[in-house]
Figure 1: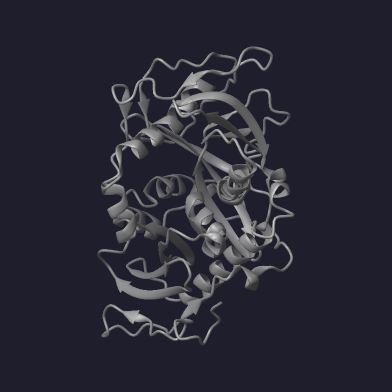
Figure 2: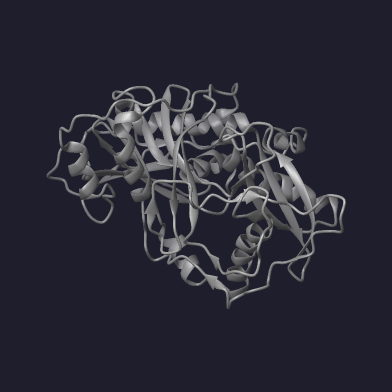
Length: 397
């Protein structure tokens, strides 16, 4: 267990350009789960501020055109029998992962709606803006044993922006991704095709192309402790039969996993995979995860719904399980660490937070390329003193 003042925690903060006088931040943040086992922190129920879509060419549209509708097979019929290998690789158009989009799509939405944000024009200046996936990685950090991460942070007009940086290890892993893993990634998207329709009440059409450029994203407002959050995350589908049609309560997350045949396999599933499913769905307030369990031939033979708020029950009595309070307390601690570290308001100045399993979160400071991530078009547009459009109502809790 590493506390401040251990050898690792005492490492010097690396400064890329010694000619610049940067404030000296705290040197590191420990990640040991025992340090974060207090009561569950305050988390404001997420409310949706808006949405946007990305089309088959990955072009941005400020509407819900890419939203799909949950359409599961009838419960009283035979098993699902979904062949997740069907169409691979002939009807598969994967997104180009060499293109690093950063926060660009979310920033475009923000630019279009900055004068209409719930909370008034000053609210954004105190907020943290990021992707839901980045927050998910923070939530799972105290229990993660394999994959490290890097988060770039810049403060601009008071707002703290967080954008993930691909680590050298992650890049090497991606470039050397084995064929089986590529096929497994396809299967997850193929499952969505079997479970979703283009219209409410419609039927799924699994004969088409699987194009992972297409995405529907929800933009949400929340607060963790005293940290206001504005974040966006991809949504698989909405359930037209949900008890509440108000997003995010009507959204459904779709997942696949291999069939389990022993108590040990289920225990490992609950400890590891279910933690990531919980973190990903709890943050945006998605109430249910529907999992398709596939056999070794890649055919989904059964479906199971995991209500997000009940996932912890599977590990509550497991001494090697995870605890939601630890996840959220660590995330709140990291956001406080980042807020107190990134003092200078400068879109070209980047504090790079780095973490590897077993260690503490450390910081290095950089100016401009290659880590600066706020695009010039965004900085210039936000800097122009344009009159704000009138405030329009947005979803309340």
